[in-house]
Length: 118
Image 1 (cartoon, rainbow, N blue to C red):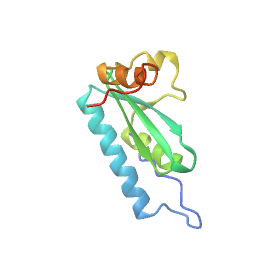
Image 2: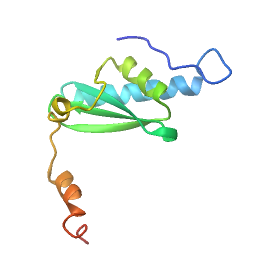
Image 3: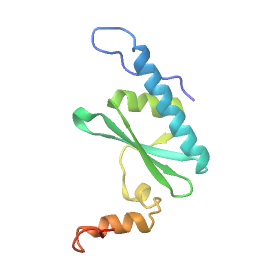
Image 4: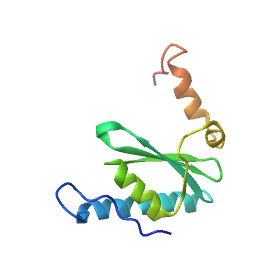
């Protein structure tokens, strides 16, 4: 596991305590996901001004995601967690994701006249 630090904030040479805490929290959450799912790999996707999305895929096919305030914080968190990070969410990596009934109903909802009302 690397001891990566996020990029410094503008005007300073070191990351703020708040940024370090955010990196540590995200790394703990990534580790907990990996522990619950037999290991994990990920992909960091930029969200523009909103930050970056860390997509996680467990060894069992479960998936989840986290949002970081910046790509630098996301990269530091995955480095700190020590997971394999894929540069793209390509077909081989995406094929490992196991979706359930919920995901399929959400994906099909817009084509089937909307979502069921309860």
